[in-house]
Amino acid sequence: MLKYFISKEFFITLLGLGLLGLLAYLLIFFIFLPSYTRHGEALLVPDVYELPWEEAQNILKQKGLRVEVRDSAYYDDLEPLTVVSQYPVALSRVKPNRKVYLTLNKRVPPMVKVPDIEGFTLYQAKSRLESWKLGIGTVSTRPDLADNVVLEYSYKGRRLSPGQEVPQGAQINVVIGSNYGSGRSTEIPNLIGLTYEEAVNTLRQYHLGVGSVIYNPNGPPEEEGKVYNQNPRALPGDSLQVGQSVNLFIYGKEPEQLEGVEIEVIKNN
Image 1 (cartoon, one colour):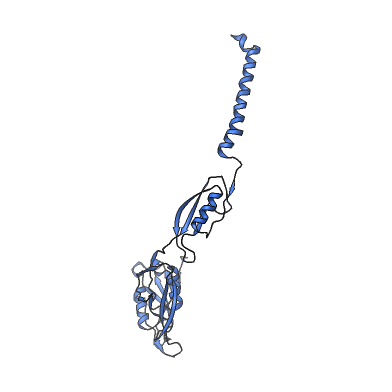
Image 2: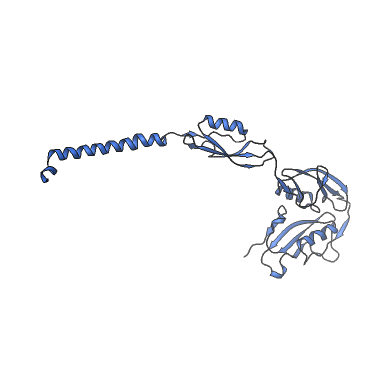
């Protein structure tokens, strides 16, 4: 037996097995695997942004790619069923038959709730509406002490109130007061101790608007949500011209429902 392991035949057998293993290695790693994974092949993903769905699908398929609609969104400045995003992004290098995920623009805009803009200046109303993806349509005026302040608002002839729903992107028509330069003035109300809603309603009664709202999270818990300062202050003999605004300082954290109003938060020192 020992003579076989030192014989010529044994070494020839070992050499044959080694050559067979080398051949198998070369076949697997240089022929089989590259053909299976298409090693070295890559495609550039075409840019189909803002193209109609059918056109985008045809372009991607012609490039040897698969297509799947992953999501939808709504943009009022784009046509329905156009591509608003793609993944992988344009000019990415991918393997053939890779799936490209598309997001399409919706046919019908989603409904959104209208925020309260009555009693706000036109600038503030525009900011609030834009934060809810709405816009200002026609602006008409009506003689009123509250100059440049929204008196009412509507959509397609229907007068609106806060919380009613309209299509996203809708243009809201507003009626504002016009009395600037009349010289009329009004007393500055004392808002200290009032909640935000109470302060806004009080200002409306005095034909004044809401300016900046500054929230201070460092106040006493029992005063949270209440006005602790205002600018200008309600001092005897002082007044404002109708339509002007009062800045409010409130204890507590910034609430989500005031989105669109100019808000500042006092940070901890």
